[in-house]
Every structure is written in structure tokens, then in C-alpha cells.
Image (cartoon, rainbow, N blue to C red):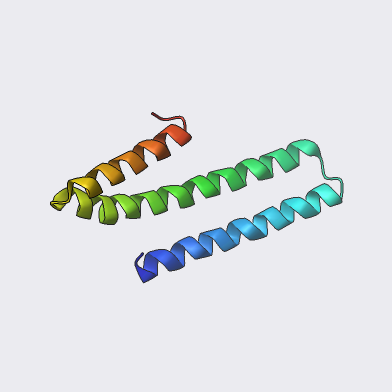
Length: 92
């Protein structure tokens, strides 16, 4: 992964990590349940953004390289991987 992209993704993940720790404190301190749920939803949205950034990079690097190449097995592998990702997210 490109250094700038990696730095951005790691920064986002550290932010998510801090946010999760904040939610943990909220639970320990007995915060209002709906407030906790709203914070969990915010973390889930942030993780979706990280996932999208990683997938975008994969599509523009690994998948593009495989599809343009002459290795049919590599093409099938990346297409199968993409289908697995979409199936796992319920988008297939």
C-alpha cells in the first residue's frame, strides 16, 4: 500500500481505537444506553470508511494489475476474492 494511503488508514484506525476506548469508559461509567449506541454507530461508520479506502486501493492496484495481466488464474483469484467480500457484506 502507498505510504500516504497507509498513513491515512492507520490514522483512522487509531482514531477508531480511541473512540472505542471512549465507549468502554461510557459503559463503565453507566452512560445513557442510547448515547452508547450512537457512539457505537459512529465507530461502525468510521470502520466502513476505512474498509472502503482499503478496498479502493485494492481495486486500483491488485485487481487492476491482475485483470490487465495475462495470468488467468490471478484474474480468477481476484474476482473470487471480490465476490467473497461482497457476499460477506451482503451486497452480492
